[in-house]
Length: 65
Image (cartoon, rainbow, N blue to C red; front, side):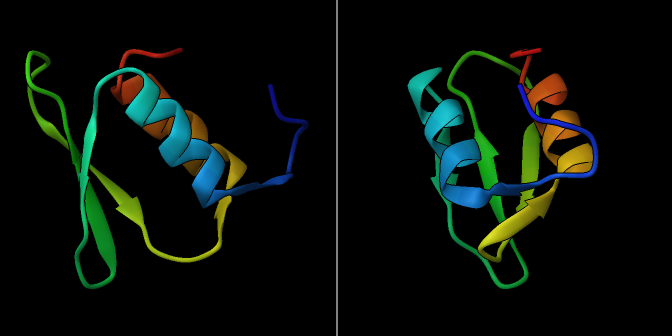
């Protein structure tokens, strides 16, 4: 997926979430991802790049990894 220590483009991460059915609601420092059938909400930091470890955690929480 990504090499260690690499920053991930936020658009790439959002694209993967939307492909799985998540909706993204914009916010101040973080946007929120919510799925119609999966429980909970996932905060996604606003900014062009996201730390690789944070991106992996977001995908894990979304059930994509």
